[in-house]
Amino acid sequence: MAILDILEYPDPRLRTVAKPVKTVDDDIRQIVDNMLETMYTAKGVGLAATQVDIHLRIVVMDMSENGDNPVVLINPGFEGLSDEKSELQEGCLSVPGFYEKLHRLDKIRLTALNRDGEQYSMDLDGLAAVCVQHELDHLEGKLFVDYLSRLKQERIKKKLEKNRRHHQ
Image 1 (cartoon, rainbow, N blue to C red):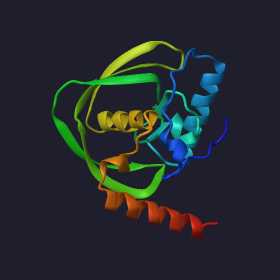
Image 2: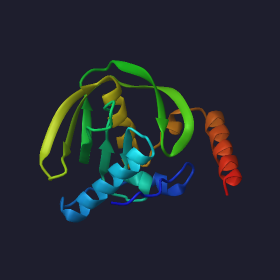
Image 3: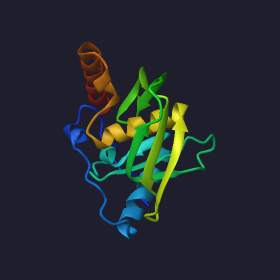
Image 4: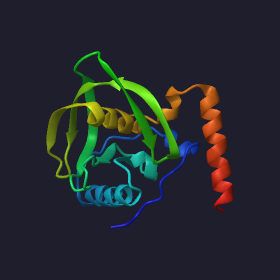
């Protein structure tokens, strides 16, 4: 396994729309394993392949207390189960150190392929539903900062660029 580099906003590669996975094979499983290791090392709860410059429709998540319940989403999609929305604070490994409250659908039905290429679906609510929506946005080239005002986006961009200059 390998720890992959996580792209940071405003890297233009984060805007790439991911392509569907044609076949779940050993190469895809290796990507999944590397993404899980990267997510756990970065202390995240979700990671989309786009964030590690792999433009395939793959997401890994783990919202368990102990980081021992990995969830693999290959070619994921979702539908809303109600119009109700939750307001939860979101952060992102590609926008380190910034958190904002966003409104997302509270209840969704997720469909995806697992690590073995088997289709499954599950109904999610609360944090799990928000996490799926956040990660699937990445696969469409969208970041949570896109929901914020232009002024907030510019402030975040400037602060991240300043932080990068200080760490070089």
